[in-house]
Image (cartoon, rainbow, N blue to C red; front, side, top):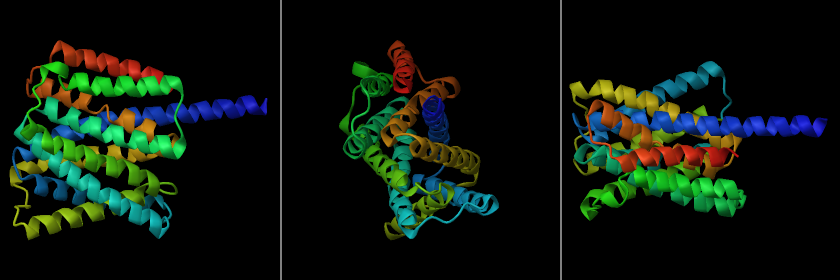
Length: 289
């Protein structure tokens, strides 16, 4: 009887982790769309620095109001490492989103960001079950299909920034998971401190503009809210389940970005991309088994 109840609790936790991962994908995709819209009106460094400054204030207030205990210094340092990767990754991705098609840049970044943590998870946690592995493969295939599959001409100059942003995001995923074992809000706040400091230092040193324009503040605020929410959902998903599962589910965010680009910007969405979204749904089912 006790073992049955324990099994049910374990299944509930796993399903909750999957739910958080999917919710993270939706909010991250919408956040990337908002960030891309902001960078059309201002510089990418200013957009990320401003968005992270807003979210830092919100995270500190939430941490104080909820009374979440401060984690060990080690966890905060892991959060700082994650923050540098996340901040640089967002600046690169927002630049790519603003300079090219959102339906190409976002999926390319997501494929790289998902692949590296899966390898790390295989070494640290062991290989997941067969159904989950097939789900991983389908999820990566779905991201590729959403990006246009064979129909996309990947010009090297157009995918360098998305590729680099994917590596940076993988760093964010791995180190945020390492730092969020005991708390969530304070490690996330640490990511913001590090990302703001690194990007601001880089902008000043290289004489890059970093003050956002007035007309960019609404999409910046929206991207800040969505990105922070997505980060918290990812941390909760990885904390309740496996990091690689959380990353793969979260990396389905291009579907949200592509649908928003299609609905709002009227970017053309091909049958292949719609197929990719359906394949993503099949991947979700297998990962939850």
